[in-house]
Image 1 (cartoon, rainbow, N blue to C red):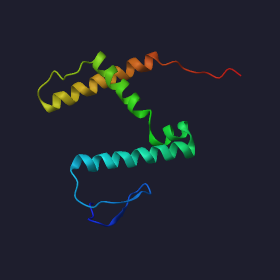
Image 2: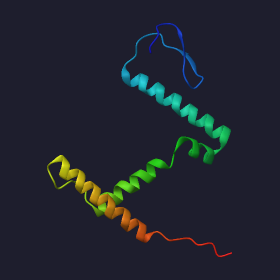
Image 3: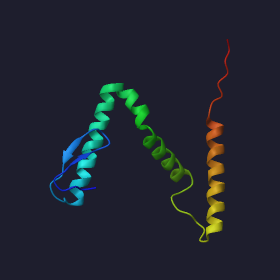
Image 4: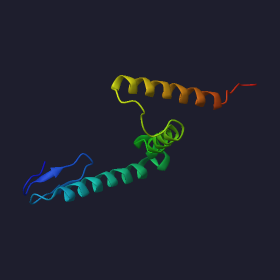
Length: 112
């Protein structure tokens, strides 16, 4: 919400004043700046590893590696045209990929 001449309270504790309506890219830049300050504050409070756990920092890398693995093994396109057949194709490909990953995953057994 843009307020002319009045203070606004952001969710990150920042108080500012917007004097006029700004273009969308400027508003987006302010939101990114507020998010950056919130991340920096969290890093200062909890440390880098605490920030990574709270913000879900590692999830993007995990998802990207999963998608890359899918495209490398299954391919990046579907072969069938109808929705029902595409659903079946994705289900079979997911089952095959999960089975391959399960075969390569070690089983840990406690000895002592």
